[in-house]
Image (tube, rainbow over all chains, first blue to last red; front, side, top):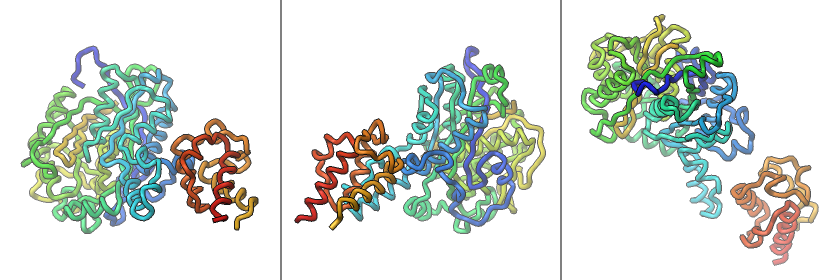
Length: 393
Length: 86
């Protein structure tokens, strides 16, 4: 990261993933190249919260927090167990788009049916968007910063970026960073539907001529971020390095991207500058690629502006994962880190007929490659843009 | 009318499930916080489930001084008795 020379390098030493594409790293990676069922709502069907927490805790946590705890537990196990660091220097950055809206919707029903005296006393600590971060800090006794960024569908990317900065600037030695989302309620699905954001066909096909909206999803991903020298000293496996990041706002429209993806262009350029890289240094783009007509057109235009037409391979994993909103950026960062380990770019599943108006090299089949710096984009309603630059170890 | 034995058994089953503790831990002298892990929010939720199960209303001031499981059982017995006498 472009920071004063006193600042430290940040590496990823553990990854945990819960996703409709698969739970756990092997299943997730395999799932990214597996044709998903046609489903507009992509749930993690085999998720059992009591595998990750007591039944009592499961009853008192919203599903997005349950997914966060599962992903965090996997990430911590993956890095070799709870890190032996000063708890005051251990933090959590866990984003979400909407938080515990499922619990809120349930309690609205309770209120209507049975009156205010029967609304659960656990409603607020279950609904609040920071519940996931708090639960993760509580589990590991982390007493450093524990924060939740909510920037809609950019929250996962922004959270990994913010977590990396906390390690880079010395505030923390370890940060669990990522995103969690489970907000498919009858009301949110209806709301996304009436705004014509959701796919009618249940087919997520980023950058395809026939793309007709996103498939809403749940999931969570958590990365263990550590200061590089300490990680190497303890012999940790290093998946990759956080090289740079940026955050911008379109300040153009609440839900539509700015023309030509101008906000995304600015964000990607700032992220590259932060990483001290030129566009030609970038070996792949992990796209936001939601499969909506507007996002994919704006993002493709932005990628072409920054890197040149067809100059860099572009993958979107949302053909399989669907759109995990505030978890999406974290899931995608995980996929980038796994693409380093597997020396392969994940395909953009669901897509068969790339929109000829988009001048990007969309990866349609798993593609062998020499791992190199990769930029991962996320864009959220509100005009929030996040770009994260990851590099191989 | 519910017998005392039935009430005791029903309350134990309900409390065991609500508090996620085995029934054998629900001794009369078990302290709500230290022994049963009941914090203030869990106590409110538990109280609601008792009210629903027994069709009673637990006045806030009646719940406040309670510190043990035995005191809960005693209060519920009193309130159920009171409600069935009406």
